[in-house]
Length: 235
Ligand code: ADP
Ligand code: ADP
Image (cartoon, rainbow, N blue to C red; front, side):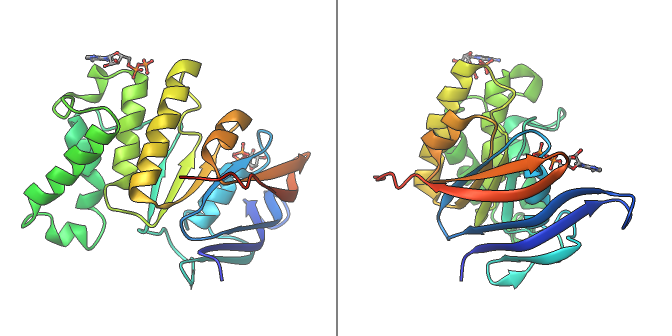
């Protein structure tokens, strides 16, 4: 069985007959350690698929299984990053990165006793994305690209088994975006989480992912998805 299994999902926003059908018959399987990109036209249900699989939104039909268990509530083994970095303005870069540790068990229970260890982990991550020296800066002192780097570190600090990235580079200019592809690849090589990346950018998908899952849409409905296996050798 796969690490991630979404099977024949239907998801409706709102009431049974009045609501928007955002997903109908959506299926996605991802093996442990795989890097999969999800592409498709705006409104086809990519973000909705991510909400279903991280347990943020319940499905109306079908099954969602992650790590062998049916998903019924928001999963703590998931790390997430979005188009906007959403760093807290009153916290330094370091404290923003460490935020999930204050919320997610078992780290929350350990944080007080092992603060130095966790802080070293956060500093290592920041170094890996090129933010060494910026630990004590506030978000508004960082460029957009740097904020996004920090948000990737925040998504990884609790060592999630599954990393969900919903257009994390979409708001960046082309040069910064391509720079962050390299950063993302370094992170993936080092931490090896299972990654699902939502993107509009086919070049980005091909550059980063092992497999590209293409969703197509009829007006308002996801009706079909196919997987393009890139079968690219990887070091
Ligand atoms: P994508 O990420 O591919 O652009 P979304 O998953 O955001 O697509 O949206 C899929 C469909 O669901 C769209 O028709 C969108 O308008 C609708 N939708 C998304 N979020 C909500 C919401 N919170 N309430 C109602 N409708 C929504
Ligand atoms: P952007 O995302 O705005 O294109 P980058 O993240 O690529 O910017 O950073 C561009 C350069 O500017 C980097 O070399 C970075 O070190 C520098 N830089 C950006 N903001 C600051 C800052 N507040 N202090 C020092 N250097 C900065």
